[in-house]
Image 1 (tube, helix red, strand yellow):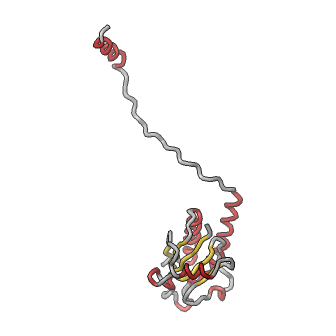
Image 2 (cartoon, one colour):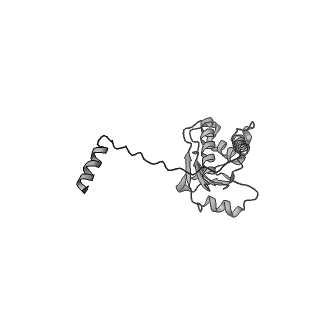
Image 3 (tube, one colour):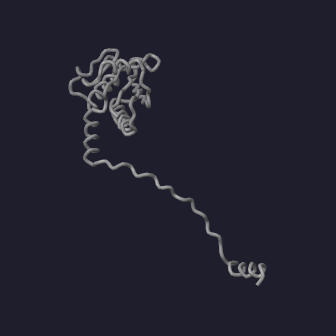
Length: 174
């Protein structure tokens, strides 16, 4: 049998065959690292408690500039933080939110930052110029919420170019 006869014979056998559509291959993503259910629940509970408003409004009073550090964090770290020596990896602007809305937004933002192993973030709370006689509401409650959060190592008012007393740099535990 010649080559042309073989070709003709092959075409005869496959003439009713239809080409299959090619489907894109799925690339398997790596599975996330397992996390204990109770550890996650404990972390969420701590974060929820850390963002609760105090019963005593006197605890909210603050001066113009904010500054806080855990006892084990050296003063030099806080000084570097307030001078802007740490790279800010993310920021959230709470302007125009109510205290309740700001609480939820800040809680989610901090949780995401911790999940991404972010070291330093900026929180823009505003100066509270339109808050009336009560003073800067968001600034005061953000101050308290962050002090209650165990994932916050330190925070301090930002440099003037980054918002001054209307924003803070927050150093997170990684």
